[in-house]
Image (cartoon, rainbow, N blue to C red; front, side, top):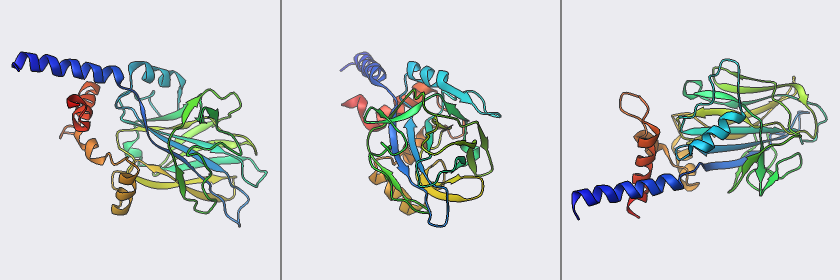
Length: 272
């Protein structure tokens, strides 16, 4: 095969890969913070989306639904990952949830805010009492572990409320409800973008203004524990090695075109 024909063939295959590119879910699920000594409890749904293959239309659709928090730029359409969360007040308490925090590495957050969207599981909007992302409810606990599963999506949810504001702190992102997330209510989706793959778990906490229960959600930390790397590999989300390829040695970002081409090469799509 001549060099010219080879270049043309690779170009056609890359174009096909582009045409089929789309966002994909890295992991989704839920956690159920609850303790016997606390009067606040409920679920936290979570999802991490890989934006590497996102089309312009998909990114624009997310951007138009995004409401940047105070101190955040607009939705970062060049970010590699989107971390999403939803607070569900469906525990045994009757109090409104005032706050939901998730552990983050703030230096690796490129934008943060809320979305005028709710999660769906099996095509049904998530709600108090289910369905939950991941398919089934995580076991209650303080801390509660995580349940993960395939599927999940998002759609407009007129019944969802808040959060009223989001604050990025030294080690967490806080969604504030001012006790407005009443019992039986579910929040809109909120979260952040990052160029760091989810290679370990971190804590999430729900508060009623006086008590706090802990659960487990994905993290954007760059320093995974060895045991956690094994867990993510089993889940099929061991993207830490690929993530290294997405950046130049001087720390500058690859263009989205380069990142997609690299992803295709790593996954063997150009030669399948």
